Image (cartoon, rainbow, N blue to C red):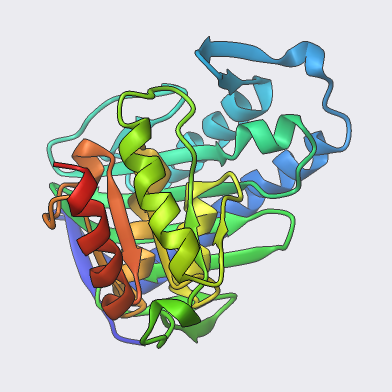
Length: 276
């Protein structure tokens, strides 16, 4: 594996490969806690943050555990987190954390949910880890070092035609102002591909796309903590990622198309017809 380093302070040099391994271990530890609570979780613990936007003590405690351990790795780093356990933005390095991506699946006992952690410097993604809890699959990537699934190198698919592909997406559940545009894209893709899957965790969707299970993933109105780690996984797996305007503003505007470069370009052409 290629070596990369970052300098959080003049006193130290951090090996990205080593730190990626440590982040993966931290994610697995948080995942173990989530898996344990999954067996005993009761709906009486559900809280509602907004329209169709659910949270529980499991999300909050998993986030606390992640923040605590990640702070030990880089004490001066900041945090961008879903549940705001410690939203302190640093001028250098920041962790972007979704402690439980797929909370609704978790609550409804649908066994697809994940832990997602990324390290970013400015706008440059350095480390990305997605831990798919119930399959015990650890997807890892660091800048310049490739993407891996449980330690084995992965890459995006090599499909050349839409008729050969399986796509992934997510349905709008908070904002519906672009619903008709989205449905128009969906209608077109449904007729040209082998199918479209919606599994309920954008982080898992991107991880599955990075290893070639899906050929392309597209969704709008996501948060940066949903996709940051997955973006780096796709990039390091040889894929292409953009927002709906062909720019690199995915983390700020929440719209993303990612996957096999050829198929992603075809999907992008369809999306831009409907999202102006």
